[in-house]
Length: 167
Image (cartoon, rainbow, N blue to C red; front, top):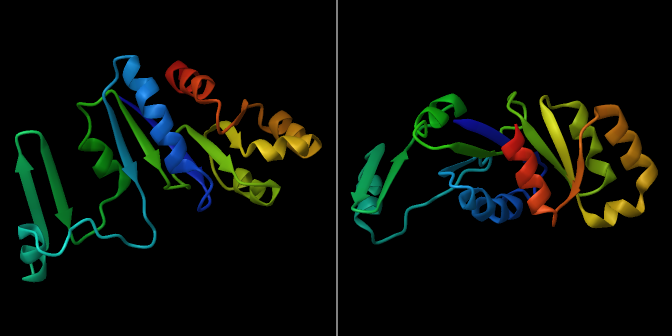
């Protein structure tokens, strides 16, 4: 099983890019899982459902399963390794977030103001930029040369999928 990570600041296009890549990777016959980190908290349950009632009553762990789907809700955070282990029967796990963990990754930049992220993370395999950033080529060329990784724009999903599959 391969693990590949996407990191960038909020609204850098991580979710959009991953959603665009999934069909391309599936066309290669791969089973894909996605793990998303949410640093702000989230809520997947809806008022009025049975699982919502269980949670409101104080259950700290809830699972629901049907013939085609299973979901688990826990009132604790699990580390990324534990979550990845839950998907060992998949071909690839795409990870959104968890910036500082050392998995092969793409770094998404909204603009040159985000370039400091490149010095904070490890295992960079490529940089994905807003197409408008191509108007600032000197800075981008320096970054690309220093890191010796390919540079992509958000809409180059075929090239990005090829890179991921080659690793």
